[in-house]
Image (cartoon, rainbow, N blue to C red; front, top):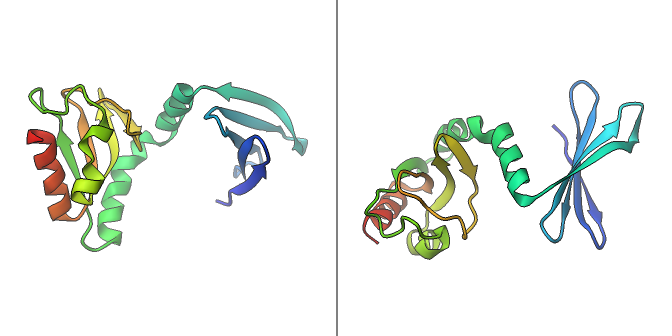
Length: 160
């Protein structure tokens, strides 16, 4: 699928694509974080029919609804496509020093070389969590790296 990127000076970026049925959709990413879902007129693909402003939370929810079921499947593909990389799922236990603390406090990438790519909480996938994402006991942290790197993240999350 081809995605067109257009710079919008003073606003941000717009990404558009055409569905197989011929409809055009877009997302405007504003510099300050807001996103607008743009639905183009089917009779005039250069004219928008509607624009729906989304808060950061709404954008996250929509991306989870659209992409969450595929993230864990894609991790398996990553493992086979990139020799030496693995995807691991690590539980945040109640006694973890990071339960209730933000992801950024772990400094996991800097300390281990592995990447935290998602957190699953109550069967909802939080893809690409930001450093201010707060862990809760029971979260499942999805980590990608070498077997050694991911083992280091597990040790870090369990004992600090």
